[in-house]
Length: 196
Image (cartoon, rainbow, N blue to C red; front, side, top):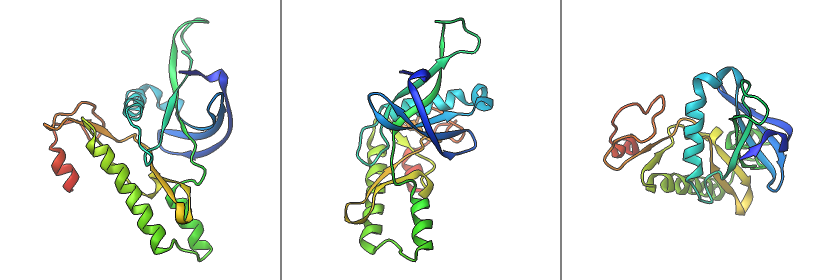
């Protein structure tokens, strides 16, 4: 846990319906990315935000975004030194941005990814997803798309990381859900999910 007072936000790097992502400096991690839940969404979506943090905390793979911890701030209703709320999820900062951003930039410059780069990107995304599905219980992402693939490096040593686990859920091999989310509120056959 990292108190908000120890975070120096340097810039906003993305925004979605429920939150935004900022680049920040946090000792001892250096430059990090922090996903913040929007204040007006906190009451309704704080449980799913915590589920995302729980999923990320279990994962450790070179093609999955790495979580460092949670950012807390004092609860608005608490006295000084009282309870805290989870304000953000602190993760590694991937300098290259999303794959969709890289694709747009390369299209504008008329420099598409080479066949080798495309194969490496697809392979690394597949390795990250295979790792998720091999977990016990399995992690089903539900939102894999270029916006949620982050590119650390390009060229021959391209490095891609799967990110944004806000729609993910954990599934036991028997198909009973451990963590539920909007699309994960029933018993599910994980093999059917992986085939679809």
